[in-house]
Image 1 (cartoon, rainbow over the protein chains, first blue to last red):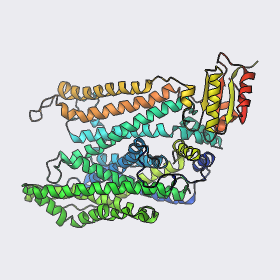
Image 2 (image 1 turned 45 degrees about the vertical axis):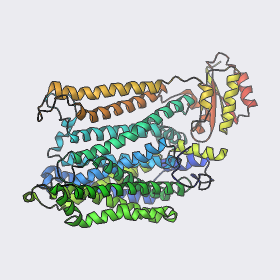
Image 3 (image 1 turned 135 degrees about the vertical axis):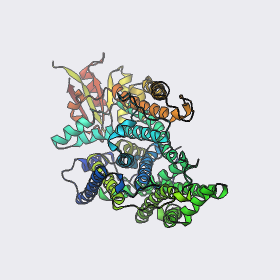
Image 4 (image 1 turned 60 degrees about the horizontal axis):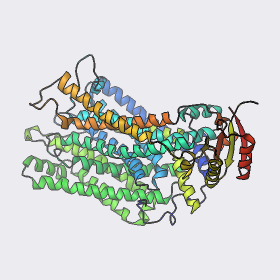
Length: 455
Length: 177
């Protein structure tokens, strides 16, 4: 029995619209890839995204020429927006894998139509995350020293450091995500190849599809590997985000040195990743007119995932306060009061409001079906999670053990340029996925269409 | 007679292609393959009744190799090649090596699964005789295609055609090799 995550049975609130057939599904989705010229909304979105990407390029040039002093990072606050945004981006990416892999294992029917959106999102967000630590290196050109290979220098990375674990996790995560994505999209690329009208597209997608034929033997192999991959990706993504939590937990700074960090980070990934997927699903549904394939059933289910995420996060917030109040460690308590009632208080409280209080609206079924409200709530969650990452990164460093060592952090224009630029990189990549790859997993939705027909 | 790859029939429903596969097996054919837009339930048990679980075993072996490789890199680095005394901690501090070991294990497993999937399916193979069949054009979107290959010992073009006609195929055609 599948865990449906919704109280409606698929028969009452259909997972796919009643007039979706195998023919209309394949043609609808693959025609978005094979059409000549993209629609106007795509061009508008792409040009804006690309303009933001240019901001990133300028920012990186300035950063690499002048040095990381152009950011607001200083002693004592040496980790600023860039590190907070690293955590933020990797959380968004992790959410994509959670939706795609975890809900494959539960056989949730709503996962089939949104998993490609989730995976495209994750492949667009992961490079943004990966750029942040590289930009943060004083000598970015030497980042490859982190690779554990037997170099002629005879110098090895320090593998006992969580920062190195982080590098390995992110590297493995991106490589594995590409393979997971490709194993799933292979049959759909074959559909685009077979339905393409122009010779160039036939050749391009013919090569990309690697000669996939859809024979029974191929399906057998694909299904078994995909299932095992999903079972691997689900714990993998938990390990990735837990290790990001260890970057902080292994530091002795008050406010960071906390055993709850790995699960706390993971809860944040669940809610913020799902929120991005909801926003992108609304965009895809509206832009490509896929109202029949991406139905209210999907929004309802994803809204419930966000609601669960916000409750888990609320639990973590309780412990975030309980630890410092219960401990006899004065520095811990001072840092917490600084975080909650001091310099970062506005960010601290608005973050709690956006990620825990507002999502409680999702208890109401009418809110879960209202796309405008869902879009706003999701946007609020993403902004709230950004604030949370910024608050715990900077507030802890601002109030370290020694009062003589206290300071404040103010981002500069280049910090904001980094944020805007990585959003540009993310959206540019996502718009390219939207244009050049089937954005709905055809093979999996077909099974749902046929199941519905045989009932 | 010019060389023949096989005879192809196109069906509109998954039930029809399943019935066709059952009838072909009952008639004694062994070398035939179905091409479907999604994995049709039960079809695999008719066409490839006893698959060997090669891929899970390959992935398991890869997991063992990956874990060993991941640990060895770190052990060789920290304990053999570049031992560094960090506050008197043991050079072979295995708990700190577990994250790297775990990630390398998963990476190698997924890579083995991905490339193993391609290898056992004979991919990439950009050309295949079945691509010449007109019926194949929609086998990846909404049609169900079955092909009896000429290398089957009981292959007889006329008999296969008759069988497909009786099963109500929408289209029957010969595929050149």
